[in-house]
Image (cartoon, rainbow, N blue to C red):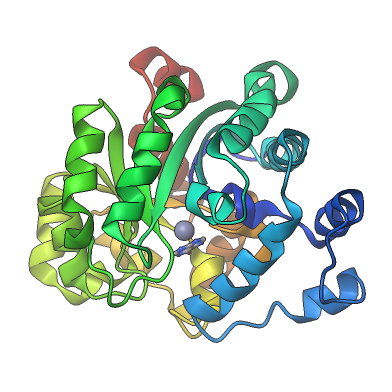
Length: 319
Ligand code: HPA
Ligand code: ZN
């Protein structure tokens, strides 16, 4: 039996497996520049975050209808449940779809069709977190928040993703203030490729409750001290870090040192279709590479529920 866990860092578009990509391409009459799934898989060799994002945005072209988003989410939830996930907080990237003429309502309502039956069908409770693309303008982010207003009851919070370096959190100060005023929770990717200063900014300027990745926090002892003191959760994604060359090999991943420092670490899959594994695979990989004990694995699972945006009774149920 896999350990019950919550997944808190998961881009739904990053769960698009090659087989589903080709099936949707055929159904929607979209031509992919790859002969077959095997050739597509061969393209999954990344040198950094941007080289991954190029393929990630390219493949999204196959996602066009509510049914597409429903099938995408359903496939993820089924796999996640099999790996012990009981609760998932799922990122989506509306700007990447709006840019292709797919409205935010199509995305949210399509995902909602799968999410609405997830507890019953898969035993997984769910939340949606809408991400802004940080390499697009602050105005575009604000327009996206405006477009999401009819669907706010479906969204628990906002996040910030895409190309990090050169796009510091402060760029999105106003849109995060507006999101907070709407009662939305706030998270942001910070310290994946960007410096520790971006983590400080995400906390101090954007008011985030949780830091996505936060990998580079260990370069700044004062920051570590603060994250420990305030029990700010970090949503680490070990296999992603290896595939995107943020760490050379899994054996050198700082997770064990971060746990030892008292940081509230969680383990997640990020974009599992691209990075070689779902969340349970990430748990097993770090256990084997870092020699983690069962007690540390239990701590990671317990942390995931503590860090989740769950009410207390739901949190207890997960433990
Ligand atoms: N980092 C930034 N943006 C992303 C990622 C990531 O790991 N995955 C999907 N969008
Ligand atoms: Zn991510």
